[in-house]
Length: 249
Image (cartoon, rainbow, N blue to C red; front, side, top):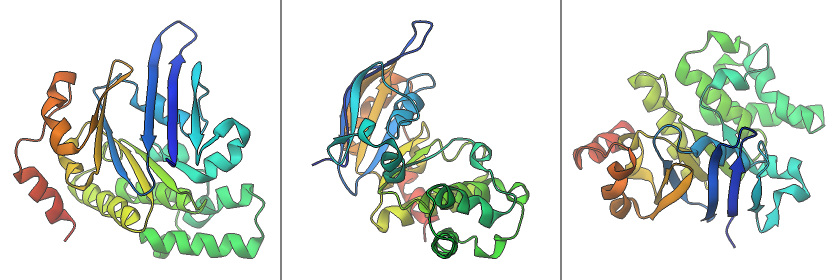
């Protein structure tokens, strides 16, 4: 059974704009799936349906075979979304308080919240910043904080929406290492990007969206040669993959 499945997922905005149309996609447990597409292709709208942030005009989303509408809170625990702008996810006065926000809203006991905050900050290497204001962190550190906040909810699936936007080279390396680490720990990863050269070496599948529709889905080495037909820049050569892997050493 797929861990995430969409069936004929369609979203039409109130002004009549079709954001996504008839998307049927199955994501299996433990996969690393890259979803690519030009700006306006519907990638983010699609992602926000997977944990119920948006409701479809038509179609459905299943998590572990069950419609997310049966229990939206449980769906959001299982599927975490790291937004393109991490500042939009920061709510705490300190790094630790920010990570604690989700577990506290689940009414977990205080000692359990403390333990999960400690564990999540250790996982992303931010333990030493626990008492710092989140707004003093670098771009890469803020993204890691957003990841820690998601990890505190114990998700099975983590979605990253354009995780490298606005980051310098060290920031990209920081975040990419963290994403690969999470995948190696057993999390199912969906990564939305148009910068394929940064992640293609780590993907099990490459999905391409174009004008709200799913147009390609398969092994990266097969799909990549069609990417430029849909406005997605193709990595220059195999050296790009070597460079990406080198970052993780």
